[in-house]
Length: 533
Length: 79
Ligand SMILES: Cc1cc2nc3c(=O)[nH]c(=O)nc-3n(C[C@H](O)[C@H](O)[C@H](O)COP(=O)(O)OP(=O)(O)OC[C@H]3O[C@@H](n4cnc5c(N)ncnc54)[C@H](O)[C@@H]3O)c2cc1C
Ligand code: HEM
Image (tube, rainbow over all chains, first blue to last red):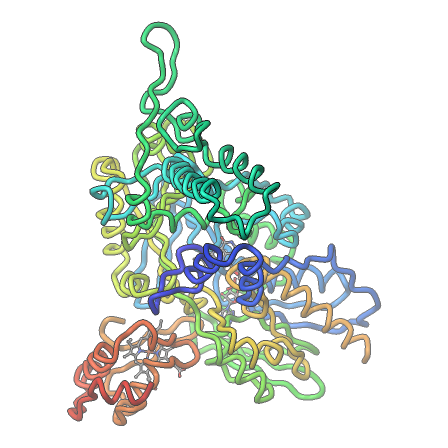
């Protein structure tokens, strides 16, 4: 995930950047796979659960994407399915907040979303990589319409409060200039013969050509203001028509200024496999996916059902649950088998009858911290004034990012910005500790340093701090390599009549694809076990 | 929650008010450093001084009155 903030001076993502910059891409790939990123989705196409389960029943706990996938497929395979869900809606973390919705977080604060019709915030998942084939296939099957999600917009900003007098810089200028300067340096080294031992004579010639092309260098291999650089980094005055229309090339930003600003840190994120084009979002909000699943399997779901205890013996599973609204009413559900997708934060607090190994695994995974703030503005000033159509600006301010809507481009009227998106680190916890209105206020104050229009155009806002989410107690499983080695297999193993699923039981944590693949794997193994009798 | 009383949803955060578990100062230090279940670890995010300060704070607030303060050295030793 992006903007994983350092909690010890260097986050995992920072470390990846460092490896990438010093050791080349092979080392980067090796490191990435061992840290649990970059693994291919592993979707093998539509699951085939062949063979008759002979009326066997399954209780599914949790109606997030893992639970919904299991419900859809198991019913189709002939099982008697029932789903228990704490919330009064399906989807879990797959969720959009729209005008009129209310949300009560832990601590008791209730916010009412006051967005205009058609506007929304995706408090959790908001983008889908092109290689998350499982999720994309379900979107296709369920008729969820997608549109491109802009991850990289060259005209969005990189911003440091400590560099360039706090003035945000266009991504395209930092990128082109950084590439130009480093290409020039490398070309100099090649020509001076400093790389003769590393690069063959034949390759040196080609390398020089490549650097010239890649870095927009002139015929003397210099990176200098001119028509050529302007073609990449843009103009101080764009070419026009008629009199006085001659373009003026923009000034180049010095290498040292770029290096010291650390803005180059913002460049790598776009090149990561997880964030490469094409990315998608459902039209109308990520929550459309959960809603589409609910159209298929909603009749199987009991809402407001808070699971408090899970028992099993050699005959079946008994699950105790309270009415989330009236906790005194305790009910019992029984089934032959159980697929439990309750997040580990919560499951670790539930009395569940499984072996010690699985129990230890359930308690071994802390959840990441994340805060999002959605801000509605009177007009789309980022488009009208700043010429930013979608994409993300990155900043060193506590809000970390501002994301512009990847929809309804170039229209008049209002819009909602993602005005803050933190991921771990002290300032994510600090924002979580604040009341929701205070988070919105901070997002406005910080954001106004990048877009002063905030001050006059703001209308209303809403904020979700994931450690205060009543239904997850956190953002997503924050596995360490050591914990994975010790506990992951024990977590995923079928224990008697119970199998766990969810993003936490995958190598794609904090992605919906992880929830779906984990669920498909779990029900595939469960089905085999059922057929064995 | 800022009152230390915890909160309840599908899971819960425990109340720190008049909390007997705080009697032993080592327990709170260890929890903050390493986390436990749904409580995230803060060992890499907070310095020894910061851990001592927050533990001393909760042990002397929220109707708790444990005056045997934890020192930064205690935290260092517990890491
Ligand atoms: C801030 C943020 C950003 C993210 N960004 C992306 C992204 O851009 N793209 C992407 O693909 N993924 C993203 N994710 C990850 C994605 O949201 C998750 O991986 C996925 O939605 C998890 O699905 P799940 O079914 O495993 O869990 P959930 O969706 O959490 O489902 C679990 C269900 O269990 C229910 N439940 C909990 N306790 C109980 C109980 N006691 N009794 C009954 N029911 C209970 C919950 O209410 C919930 O409905 C993001 C997540 C967050 C928080
Ligand atoms: C850094 C400041 C913090 C301190 C000093 C602190 C202290 C404590 C203490 C003393 C307990 C034990 C209570 C008991 O056993 O009765 C506890 C438990 C817990 N805390 Fe924290 N905490 C802190 C931050 C947090 C945060 C930020 C979260 C959530 C995001 C959190 C979540 C929890 C949970 C879920 C438990 C129960 C753990 C279990 O099941 O064993 N804590 N905390």
